[in-house]
Image (cartoon, rainbow, N blue to C red; front, side, top):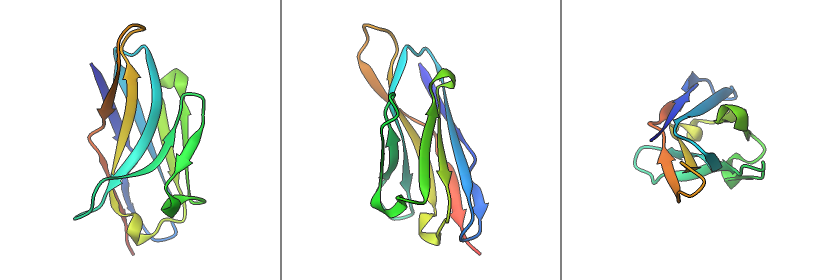
Length: 121
């Protein structure tokens, strides 16, 4: 199976920065799209940013110009650089990945356990 482990969350003041990392491990043939989602209390989980294996990215309108997603395919790791953080960015951030366990297997979707990001003075 596949495990996604996030790190880098924490408490930061408004205007500050954080960098989240998510490392995938296990039986992996190829990872296709990787992404970051977030869920604030009382709200639905929403897509923050995604990146394909070829490096094509997409972002939620609320984070465009402030967040940047990147990945290291050799390390099966995806990153989220978050700048100019706002209190409304406070949420649990989840890593997500579409993974093929072998060349003949179907793609499966996996989630990390989540990491808390709190933006507060």
